[in-house]
Image 1 (cartoon, rainbow, N blue to C red):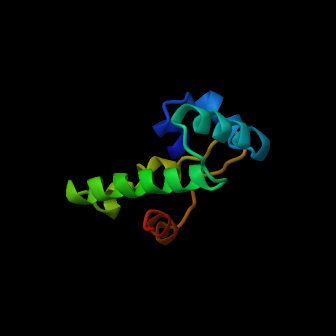
Image 2: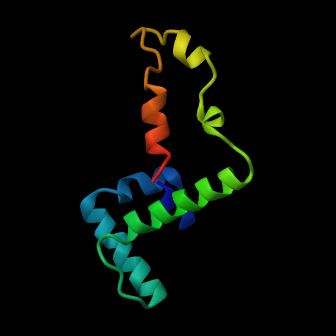
Length: 99
């Protein structure tokens, strides 16, 4: 989604483009627009570079792991009708945000 967002595409329109067949069509459109041959991993590399740039910015701005936490009510208030709560361990959240 970081790649789709950085290309200026609508998130709702961009989600279907992340499936393999539409993704190749998107790559063809991007190649035609830029005049460059883009490999099949272009969107993954683009998205990863965007997330790394965002993380560098946040680190430089003084953000910490504490700022990656959701408010407590996500962990405590049960979502009806399932009764689910957000239960992803903080260690997992921290590992995802570090490349």
